[in-house]
Amino acid sequence: MRTDLANDILRLTGEHLALVLTAMAAAILLGVPGGVLLTRRAGLRKWLLGFASVVQTVPSLALFGFLIPIPFIGGIGPRTVIVSLVLYALLPILRNTFAGIAGVDAAVCESAVAMGMTDGQVLRQVQLPLAAQTILAGIRVATVTTIGTATIAAAIGGGGLGVFIFRGVASVDSAQILAGAVPAAILALAADGGLGWIERKLAPA
Amino acid sequence: MPVVEFRDVGYQIGNKTILSHVSFTVEAGETLVLLGRSGSGKTTALKMTNGMVFPTSGQVQVEGRPTTEWDPIRLKRRIGYVIQEVGLFPHFTVAENVGLVPKLEGWSRPDVERRVADLLQMAGLAPAEYLGRYPRQLSGGQRQRVGVARALAADPALLLFDEPFGALDPVTRSELQRQFLELRRDFHKTSIFVTHDVREALRLGTRIALLAGGRLEAIAAPAEFRSAISEEAGAFLACLED
Figure 1 (cartoon, rainbow over the protein chains, first blue to last red):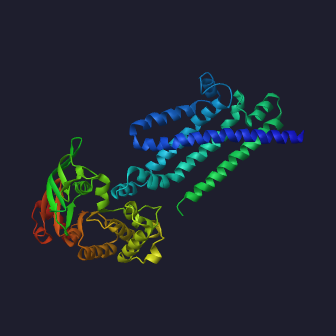
Figure 2 (tube, rainbow over the protein chains, first blue to last red):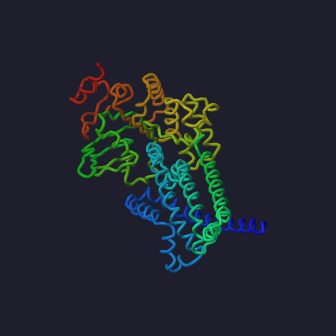
Figure 3 (cartoon, chains in turn purple, brown):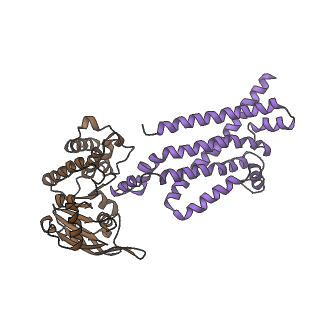
């Protein structure tokens, strides 16, 4: 019985991690280039940041509800969950990438251009390294909230640690709730600590 | 052939005129100082020389070719540029900052290293001590010297200075001005130097071009400039007596 529970916790923690890692990978792949694009196309800024902000205000259960009927990205199961987690994680990454690059000292960028660096060289050698800390801070915030939000995945059959929590709520069993909530909290703390450590490493010595 | 030639250059943003009908030449080996108040258009004129800004009318020629016909990257790498806040890359060491353009130009690593060490030596910064430092570990004057060394790195034909010594204390500034003169004497570099400090203009310039409200008011050698050739020149010279 005890080992059954331990196995369940391990399995669901694994599922939870898989949801979060997949969603974060996609959110980073979309958010960082998206943020760079925002620094190059002022016209897009309002729309893209506005869209990401609006998505963020939609309650997660409602977002699942909206996504389920949509073909290809919707339906019951982890796919819908990952799509909505990506949408939630996008705003902090997009915003911090944009803010990090826009915050690089104008004199530094100007001298980079004046020295004859191409736009790509300015971006890769100057802007991204100097914005790295801010970008990573956005990724950290997004990761921590995603770990929490992913517990709701169980509501539409997405699996993860939310399975314990929903089961516990339904049967008024606080032990079950804790079996989901404690590992989720530990994951969040570990992600926060680990990414925070890398962030400090990136700080200019 | 002049190194740089401005031909009836004008620059407008919307209906705001920044420069109008500016013509002058910069000959090899000379230092042309662009002197003027804030907003006189002197920095814009400087940025037109390396193609950071293009004229909306007229033409800027570098080595006989209009800036619009140069490959924009080639043009910038041929011209050294030093700005007031220096613009050193804070995440690069002194060596990486100084070696930047040679590296972009594809020099071999030993060549870059040798060049960087020579330049630091010349700038009065012992290479062994300063190569691995970051800009924030330097004083303002040292940063500015690294900035000049970086501008010289790929042996450019022309150097542009945008109020490079403006933020320094008077003693350091005077020291760097002296080094600037030595640099010109030893290497015969051509340069355009923007400043609003008339004393600096008289000390460093072989000729002084006075800009006011986007127009070229006067252009003269320092001795001639001292005889107050225009009203604006008189206003600047009056600062010397304060």
